[in-house]
Image 1 (cartoon, rainbow, N blue to C red):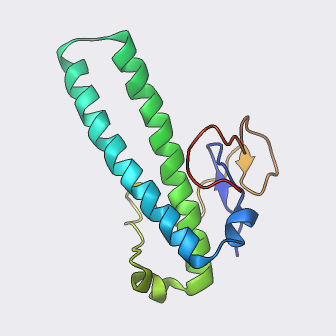
Image 2 (image 1 turned 180 degrees about the vertical axis):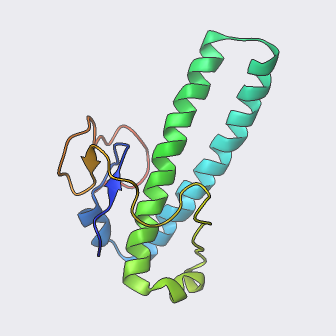
Length: 138
């Protein structure tokens, strides 16, 4: 399986994700996609309020959400990459998982190279910070 590079700290490495059972991977993808849907709704509401009046606290929440969204989309992409490696692209639908459009967010496959390798190669602060997200922790 090809290397997978990330731009955001993740609570687990690619090697750890590859050790997970298919059911755990599918459940985590589903949980993250649900979280992303709620975050998108929250972002829309925050943007609406901010278009009417600038507020420092709302702006900070909006900016923080943007970072969380990017991190979770990247995590979904990593898990899809692992799942595809385990079951094959043709079997993803059997698990209720579809690869997103290549142009869309959380596109599956390796992300662009960055300063942090999910296998733990180079550093980003908090790469395995269990307090960063209440999701899957290994």
